[in-house]
Image (tube, rainbow, N blue to C red; front, side):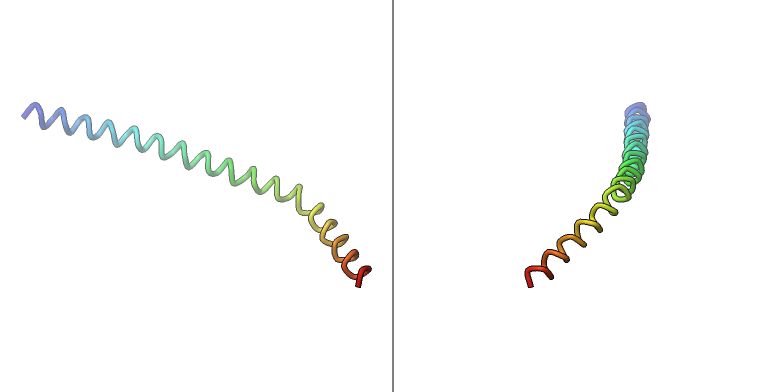
Length: 62
């Protein structure tokens, strides 16, 4: 009976550790998502300007 309780306790502790790690992964994913959104906001105007220049170069070369 003692082994069953010990095994159950260890299993519960392992699940708790996995839950904490899962929460940390979710938090890191949210931070990454916000960083990517900020980078995209910074890149977008430059990208549009570059695409316009490429379009002008293509039309000039005919």
